[in-house]
Amino acid sequence: MRRRIVMLTVLSAVLAISLFGIPLAAGVAHYYMADERSELTRFATEATVTVSAAQLSGRDPTELPSTEPGVQLAVYDHAGRRIGGRGPAVADAAVRGALHGVPANGQDGSDLVVTVPVANNEHVTGAIRAAAGKMFVYRRVARNWLLMLAVACAAVLITGLLARRQARRLARPLEEMSAMAERLGDGDFSVRARPSGIPEIDSTGASLSTTAERLGDLLARERAFSADASHQLRTPLTGLRLQLESLLDAPGNTRVEEISQAMAEADRLQRTIDDLLALARDVPRHKEPLDLDGLLEEARKTWHADLAGKGRPLRVRIAPDLPTTDASTAAARQILHVLIENAIRHGAGTVTVDVRDAGDALAIDVSDQGPGIDSPPDDLFRRRTVTAGHGIGLAMARRLAEAEGGRLRLARPSPPTFTLLLPGA
Image 1 (cartoon, one colour):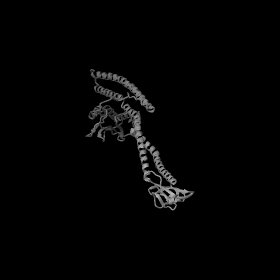
Image 2 (tube, helix red, strand yellow; image 1 turned 30 degrees about the horizontal axis):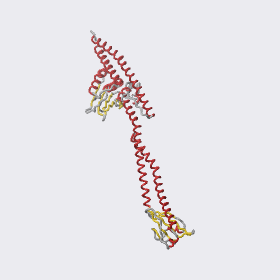
Image 3 (tube, rainbow, N blue to C red; image 1 turned 180 degrees about the vertical axis):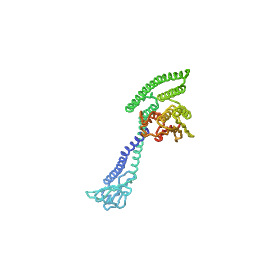
């Protein structure tokens, strides 16, 4: 941003100086050319005063007034012959015009030429020719152009320095707000914008600070609610498990299998509550590679009994050389459980979990041999959507996947196959 501000300011200054300087440079060149012609006219006019009729007739030697270096004066008689000074021996077009009473100024090759008639008793008796090289004028113009160029460069340099200072003043608070927004996105709600002295930026910074404060308060309330909810949920679960253990140890108990299964369900519910509360609190965690083997083994133990009771096998296939991922184990476990549970409740036949390499991601496919899904894929992941049963829990599972930087999608409607993509580490 700083570079763009400086570049735009400098380019604007260069454009403004060019729009002003180019016509000025042309005007300077025109001025010096006109000034030189004016000087030549002055020298020629002064010479007409000093030249007498006797000199024009050749009776007296011709003496011309002194001039600046580089200026040539010549005197011509009425016949167009040079009788003094330096110039063409025979009258040129400008001199002939002056001999007819018409002063002239123009160019003769590389010289500027001015001619003035010499009159005696209202009769033209001769002419004065003044000439100077244009190179002398060009040198004067070049010196002034160099001076103008130096001033323009100094102006551009000063403009660039001022623009750099102003860009730093403008960009610093914006860069700080960008870093502040990034920290806010990472969960740091203590960020506050410092005053910059620029009303518009300070107003935006104040709004961002207010937003951070409100989000911090909201998160604090949600965490307090999570703690209360955790206590309210864990207490009855703990009591339920104690009662199940008492029933399991009771003499003459004939329902050991049912009670053990209920205890396993209570443990799974407890683990689900812990995972969801941890995810809801967004507790910072150390990035560790996902224990894929442990995750799949836990899923096999959790769902084997349910599937076996319905005569449906659970097949887990793991491809070799899989990429690692540092996705949250809690999130991956909940997503996988949602997908397997949907396959059990709403599918048919074998439930297959395929783990494969998807390039820069780890892919987990969960499929069954059911009739398929007729509803549009987007409807499956809408909150509280239940279309042929397949929508249950998928909205939450997709949100968990996206929170880990992954994706959850319906890869194939028939047989139904859901794919979880977790980014590689």
